[in-house]
Length: 153
Image (tube, rainbow, N blue to C red; front, side):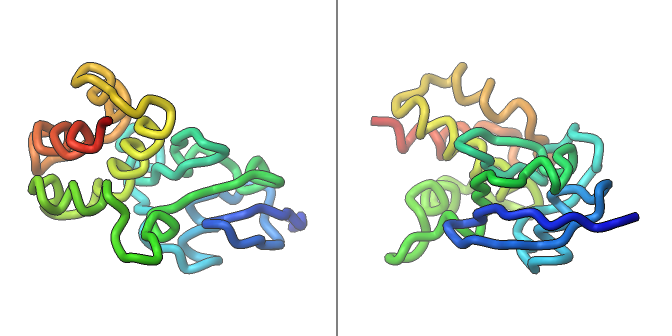
């Protein structure tokens, strides 16, 4: 297959990369750019471990072709940290015990961050709906909900 050149911004850094027509965004991030914080789980869009924020909205990067990200802004877990260290949502996850094995954490954090950016004071139902596309087998979700809720204004 013939590669196509795309331009996109990832974590506030501009990239120009050649991608295969069938290459997924998760594969571009992990294997071509070395951004391995985005996890590759089910590859069917069911588990949410590959969640990234694209143009302000959480998306399953296993279901997005890299070519569809042309001209877009993508935030991965690597782009969440601030100059002072961990982002407040990352700190909250750690403090509330919402991180155990860590496999779902980057997707959960990004889903929570996207929610808080569009709704700075979500209730528990809002939070549960926002993370409903992310599966966790360790925490039972309550600690994740508490970590996100703590950051509400």
